[in-house]
Each structure stands twice: as C-alpha cells, then as structure tokens.
Image: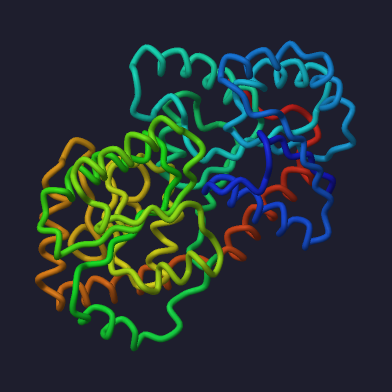
Length: 368
C-alpha cells in the first residue's frame, strides 16, 4: 500500500497521540508499505480553518498516488471542507485516527459548541475511523452515526520496557521515606497539574515527593503559574520539575517511583498511565475519559472526579502509611499491564483493517 498521513507539525512531537501515530507509521513501513507524511503547520485553531480554502492543499491531496489517506483527527479544522471536496472527485478512502474528541473536553461551553460544528462536519467527511479506546468511539458516536467501518485499537504499555524483576515490587514498596509520586504529561491547563499541586500542598511534607515530567514550552503562562505556586507554598524540596523525558530516562524515573498521579486530566486513552503500570505502579487518574477502561478503583489505582480535591490526598496518605496495600496494588497494576495487548498486536490489527479497506473499497464509503 501507499499511504498519505496528514498531521500537524512533526511526528516526533512528544505526546501520546503523536507517539501512537509514529509507532503506526513504523509498523506499516516494516510491513513493506510506503507512508508519506503530509505535515501541515501547527497554528491557532482559527488559522487552521483557512486551510480548507487552500488550492495547494487540495491539489496536493487529490494528486497524491495514495491507496489510503490517513488523517490524525487533531487536523479536523484544516480538513473538514477539504475532505468533502476530495470526496466529489476521488474514491480515495479517508481514514481518521481519533485520539480525542476535542468538543467533548472540559472547557468553555460556547467554545465547545463552535468546535462541535466543525468536528462533526469533519467526522462526517471521512470514510472510516480508528479509535484509541472504546470511550473515544462512544464519544464520537454522539456526533456521527456508527455506519462507517471502524476499529478500536488501544495503545499498549510496553514502549519503555517493563519492570526488570518482580522482586523490585516488594523492595520498593517497603522502602522508608516519602511516597514517590510521578506525573507525566506536558504542562498544560487541561492536564491538571495546578489543582494536583494545590491539593498535595495540604499533606504533611514528609510523606510525599512529586516528580513532574513533560514539556515546559507549550504554555509558558501556565508553567509560570505552576512555578509561582510551588514557590508560594514552599514546595521546592517536594517537587522536581524535570522537563521532557522519554526512553531510558523516563523508564528509570518509573523504576524509582511508587505511584503515578494525574487525576485531573481528561484522557482519550491515557498511554502514560499504562506505561506506568508496566513498572508496577498503581495510578491515580480521572473518572472522566478512558482511563477507567483499565483502572479499577481500589484494585490497581484510583479514579477521581474532576472537581474532587480531597480524595487524592486520602489516597496518597493511605498508600504511604499502608505499604502492604501499596504492595498489593502495585502487583495488581503489573498484572493489568501484562493482560493488555502489546504494540505489535495493536498495530497489526490496524494493518489488517487498512488492508481490508483497500482490498474491498474503491468507491466512496457509506456516509450520513
């Protein structure tokens, strides 16, 4: 197959969605297919809308010698009208990879109504969909019906490796000292770092330490707010702002940590949570979003309501003082990771799905 893949910016961007896309591209290439990356500049949402009236973009996509046109759904403001134009001229299947439904994330209601109009038109313009979770699939179904071919292909947790020895689970849980917490997410308002820090500041300092891993350049104002809060509440010794890390660096952070905490982030899947479980860490996540698909409260982690600012502290306090419970939950988290498919399995299921589309569909697919 020859595939075009439309994204914003660079495929090497360090977010869950881009990591997923990158692993898919590598898998398809390893299976002998050609994948051309069609990179659009990442700009403000309003500027993206203007891309739909770009003759150059329409021409490039229409003229491409592709069997399938993959599109990261993040690009929907640039493509909602372009796709409709392409559909009138070509039978080229357009397949959206849906990581999150933007208009269903927590934000200003009026802004979400605007996003919904655009996103709905985009989802109606594609021929098939790849979802990263069943939660994302159900959310998309509130905008468009389910008559298009689709597959749910969830991320795996083995990208960074896994705990090298289960002996470490017991020795780490029983270590003296504070509970070592880790947050892995770019420092952005929607990831909920500020309310997490505000809550933790009310706990006794000797029982916790937080490491923050993630980009500090995507929202400079929010990063300043975070650093200001840390200074105001004298938490400099309690919180390490590590910046972006990945690969062995991040794996080593996981090896040294007890609990993954990101309770106020609405996740389309939550890849970092599952990667933490690969290192036998229970997770504290949000009851909103898809994390609930693999986190069972009280068993391998905790789920927190978006406006609950007390339960996180209760969880941390409990795990610090009851190391046997921490041990049991760590084992449960590791078992959860081992029960999930690995990346090879997930990507091969997408490969079969795409191959089936090319083999059976050479006319426009069913639309609303």
